Length: 163
Image 1 (cartoon, helix red, strand yellow):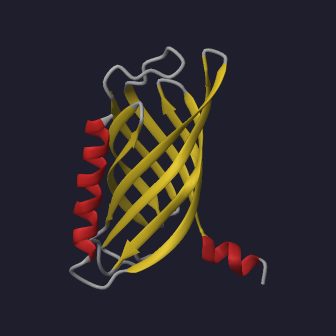
Image 2 (tube, helix red, strand yellow):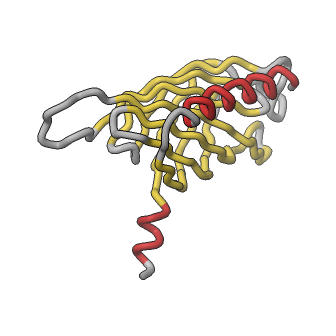
């Protein structure tokens, strides 16, 4: 558990130090999705999106993974950090997709991931999860292939719908 906290602290310091160099705009988002990590989970949470220009975007988030393992309902907290990259210039539909590189961690596993995102709103990522120590969820070890499908909803859209 100590290694997990140390890794999250280092990752957070890295991202926060990059934000100290220039003014970044921050946007809040709500995310819902599906996660396959040696079993199926639903995901709901929030993310903060930081950008200076549209070429490189940073996202930090926290969410809850909910699912059933060995017929027992379980909830796991999840922290994640992503970098969205798109250096394509002079196109008609400017920056419609981004390449995504990131990592996610729970109290049971840590998973680096890669993928694509459409407008930063719809993510499809894959990676490989490494268990944290001997951690198990209701007797099941969460390791191996990790697949995420996530919808990110900016809170500005929600606010504008109810005006």
